[in-house]
Image (cartoon, rainbow, N blue to C red; front, top):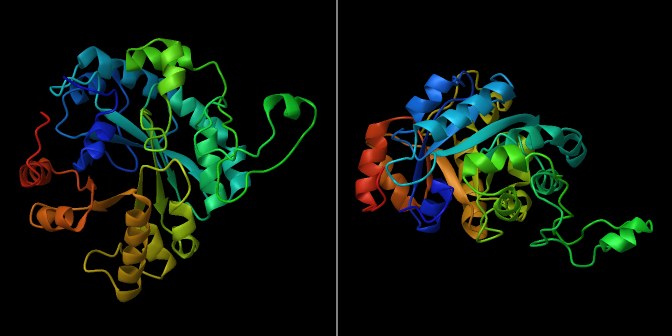
Length: 313
């Protein structure tokens, strides 16, 4: 029986790799596709809205169909669904201005969000804050003014890399909670970023895919609230002048960027996402990669056997 709502978090907490399907655009968000995907071989489904349509009606229909077609063979109500948001994490102001996207996406009942083109820690903290309800205080600067002080005009920003107060408001718990199979009150308690909140069911990630993101990766990945991160070889490669997407073995400068991001993930206990194939998956797992792209069931089958995974697919 499932112990958590979010299957991806349940597996990561066991140091098991998770495998996803779904590209950067074009995922079909219909009732029929949701019923079919309810029994996907993957541990989570990536819905690409960075380049795909920002379709909230379709996403709501799709999430409801996952419930209708479920539960999964592992006993979870649905597979985990993580959405790539359209906003770029270039700076905090841009993220805060576009925080409505996170509210809309989370309100459909998804289990996580990926922030693309993360370039500095302030932007990433703004992203985490935008996904949190204000009464949760884990990771928040304790020196910030209390709600009463704020009502009297006190203003002070978080310091020392801590989070500010969450900015997500009431309203969407009535649509998200039925997807998770819990009450609205319980949803507000449990829709928290893991592992910042060990009981949280929300998986937040970032993609580092620009020179600025690589330059700031150590501070970005130290931001509280992140569960996974990846190097984006396509956009990073384009910035470096490679029109074709660089593949492994990467050029020297990209190998160095990859090692730098991976090292920062290890230091901050953030799961590292990378592509793997059947012939490379064992080595990737032994190295410590824990979120696997590649969209091939055979890769997942070999990897799960390599790690002696017990959870049913």
